[in-house]
Image (cartoon, rainbow, N blue to C red):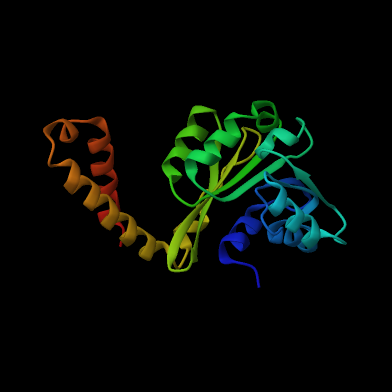
Length: 214
């Protein structure tokens, strides 16, 4: 049985895609992408030798998956894939991986990103680089709720209602997020400079929005 995070990422991939699975770990996402028909081809990458060997062993015999050893997207050429999946990493690292291979990213049509933290950094990067968030979902693992962000280029139509809006995890996630932000604002309130900052205003606005969620 695949992890709920992996399943949520899988469900956002369009059928028949050519996919890059970055930091593929044991290759579970890559294998399910092929077996489910979501992907016609997968390039699975790992940065270090040990994990790469484990990945290569796990995907052995599964036609349609190629393992590559190297740093992020830098082992791919522009146009090799149309969908890029990066899951299980921090938002800052996801941002760096995308920034380090601009030609590969620009040639893709879909980015599916599952940050373990720092989702705001990912959204900010997408906005600054003209990617449109077309869908989002939530997944729970070990009691923690994670965000999965699907972004497309201008040729993709935008989903009217995100998956996360109808997710059974929505209320729990909103409560967790509200509690976290209220703690941050409480700490920032101890400093006049922090209270007067743009960040304080942005976080306060998010808190106000979260309080409106039924």
